[in-house]
Length: 303
Image (cartoon, rainbow, N blue to C red; front, side):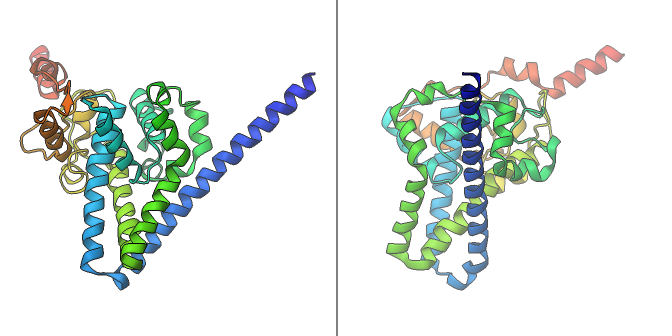
């Protein structure tokens, strides 16, 4: 009986490892294809294809990954009507960073174990690992984090279970539509170039925004505000120290001059009655975590 149990456990372990290897191969393949597409992109340039890539980039990054995956599903910083929640999550799927449950689970673990040995993607394991290497080590992440039991709110909903089972088919479907209506130029620019840009614009938050920048808030991690990432690449996600200080906040660019495009969209949705329970930090909460206030108190104490 014991031998049968050991055999079953061994088979289960082998299947898990194979599954992990499969997703590692998928991720490696996707990254290789999208970067090869960049090399061919100049030879297939058309203005139509370029603008298709730009529009898909802005929509998948801002509406899908930042507004939906990050602020709505991961942190519940505001509520949407269910049809709109599902629509934006579907848009996020086309950012090619996994289904909502996968993305949300990893990000919740990131906040739970920020810059510790259990963080899914911290620069303490190297800049390259935090930027992109973690995506090729599925089994390693499972060893560190265990099962994704921190997304039960999504697992209970059939829609998100459906997206988890089928998310690759939706990406292939979009690729086919782009090819049918625009040929190779639309396929190369709308999928390859655009997905590579989305990947690096989000991954650089994991790497650069835990390495370089300013820290206006007293957080127990390495998060920083990086104006290059915040303004030029992610349209708001680069104000990362702000985010780690107030992860529940729907607004990440807390200063008037900190560009935060998803926040402007959320405010519009709130004005239209489509977004409710929008959370932002109070002035008292800001004072408690302000590095400037902490430094002033420390200076007074030393005197």
